[in-house]
Image (cartoon, rainbow, N blue to C red; front, side):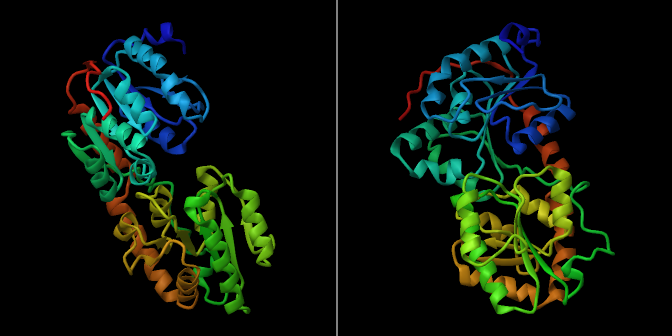
Length: 383
């Protein structure tokens, strides 16, 4: 949809999301808000179709850093044309800059994790950009308390309210396997199936999981132990080479890559444990979906994970500790009764606290409490 066509949307009606349209998280958020009556427009550098939205608007497609700044005139033209009811930056660096600089408001800023927990520590420039973007917000959200605390720290002087809003799990779709499932959790002598849903890139430590699997199989030579990797990502070839070097063939490690929700649910229902051991993370959607499917969880020792993975839910390990991960896996392999108890606990926890429907209802209510829309000046300089 072109800018003239966007002008057909009545002023003060649209929810303008600046975010990665190719991300399943952006897509889910947008669809949830469409379902709640919002007219949603997504402006993005990574265009992809999103069912139900009024438009996906590509702006300087690509990933280069300079493109964020070159796109600013187009960002401001889009906001002037659309005159949105709400502007929402999804990912404080980049898209959050666009939301803060578009010249319209109210502005919502949502941190995704590394954008607030890691990137501001990388350079003084990024700290200044993040701080400037947050100080222009009328509302800030994140999916973990440590991310909210970081927003307060880096947005020094920002007065907008901060709320924990989870991406949440679709607890109607992500459900445990039927009782008659043949998954190893129901059979202490059957295969034990490990599942990872995280991306194949440095932060998620898939190499550590591969090394731990090799050690687990060596420690339990009489047990079939396998790993399914569903994340996909840029380190695929390096990780395949690492698995081969560790003596793990295609039967031991399946590099499945990214799949849709239905295939993901099927993989979870066939698994015995979900492993998520990133070095940095806020609340992981895949972790919540694992809980919803009644899977025991092994997670890295991060504030967001500690909330969701107490001893009755799974095991916490240091992010890059192969030995600790090996021992956590062996403990679950050797104790199917505890695994079954964790499965029951985790499904109940997801229903009680991690439902996407409940979280998006909360977000919709926060949207509707925001002040009226209108133009915003850009008098404050980045400092």
